[in-house]
Image (cartoon, rainbow, N blue to C red; front, side, top):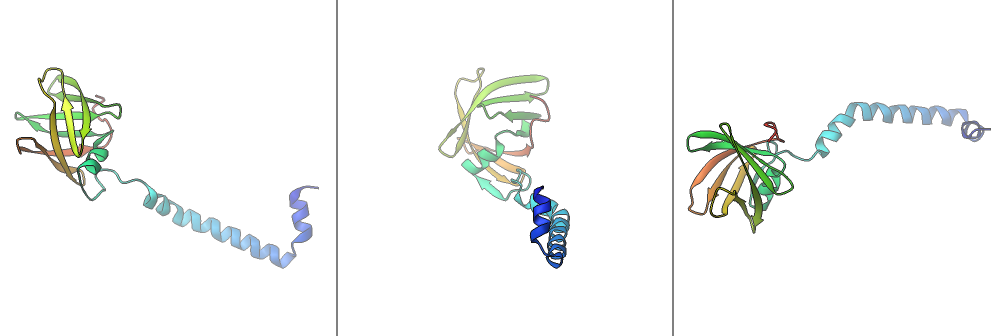
Length: 149
């Protein structure tokens, strides 16, 4: 005798119809509402999130690509979770390291003499990166590593 056979012995026929209706109703609700519930629980991407600054903005950047313009030329910089930053400007690719100093994003490239730290502010996917000399740079965050850096 299976567990289904046992359940049929102990559940009256009227109760069976109620239970089946309840199960079918819950299944229909999950089909209709399930995708919406899953979307509400998903972690926000930089393009969906509100204004962020400091450590929260840096956390939103890591694992994604920053783009902007430097010296009149567009660049793409992928911030890997392992602490490496790979930047492409034109055909040149530079590999450096990023770190966090309090609420600042710091970068160091082998071709530079010093580490440079920036304050980072994001409003959705767009933002401002400000260096130690108070020079502000417009940036945008692109999800993932679309340039395969």
